[in-house]
Amino acid sequence: MIRLENVRKTFRGTRVLDGLSFELALGERIALIGSNGAGKTTLIRCLLGEYVHDGEVRIGGADPRRDRAAVLAGIGFVPQLPPPLRMPAGQLIDFAAGLCGKAPARIDDIARQLGLDVDAIRSRQFVRLSGGMKQKLLIAIALGRDAKLLIMDEPAANLDPEARKIFFDLLAERAQAATMIISSHRLDEVSALVNRVIEMDTGRIVLDDKVAEPGALSSRLDCRIRLKHPDPAIAKALAGWKFAFDAGEAAWSGEIAGADRLRFLGVVSRYTGLVSSLDMTERTH
Image (tube, rainbow, N blue to C red; front, top):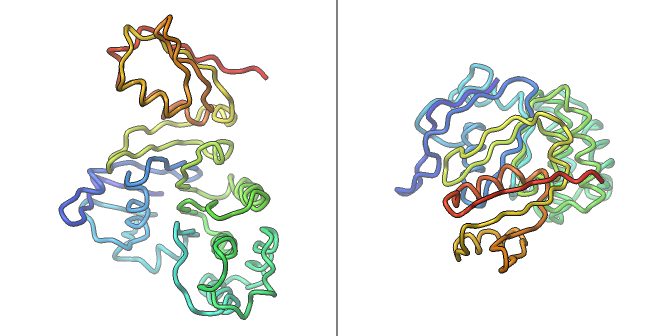
């Protein structure tokens, strides 16, 4: 469904995407992870046809840049930052519904499930809504399209805990009917939903793994790392994971979420010359 081949993007002499190549098949649900500046949002904007870039991007065989209207018609998108739209919320709902041939009531219904009082905001300018209201409305518009491809950039940002749960429940209902790319800093939130994890760092893909078992990323693991000798570099890296150091055994121990095991192993792999043993035990309770 999606194919990228050697995609490169440069801003003011800085390479933001550095030769990305991967394919996304129908039914795959990707968690796109990585630190700020890794290139996640730039990648998403290339998929949406917003940026000129080197290399090739195809969605359903079409070029999102050249055939943008046709490609976007089949995508439900939630941006990281809400656009500064001055049109009233009700007009935005009617406009979005008209573009995809859906009834505005469909969007209204999803917004209400998320806890948004649509009638109370219908005449208010979108730009004047609170962050949470904007996010709920954008999610309702994206899901109300019933698109086969959902692309979401930090979609749970600004949502209250109850709305977060409802949102991910709504996504779970679409799991068998839609292909998804979900950019998130919190892999634990999407761990039960995704079946593939792609991690980016400095514009490159540093990890691309399929999730063998749906619950594998929801677990907790006890971890213990023994070192050949103490080292300040690995100390700094492991301290970021809230690990405790045992000076007597030159060992670090702590707990990590199953959703973070791949990223954690990527960090530890940078210090293989210092590590004498690594034990990870999944909790049974």
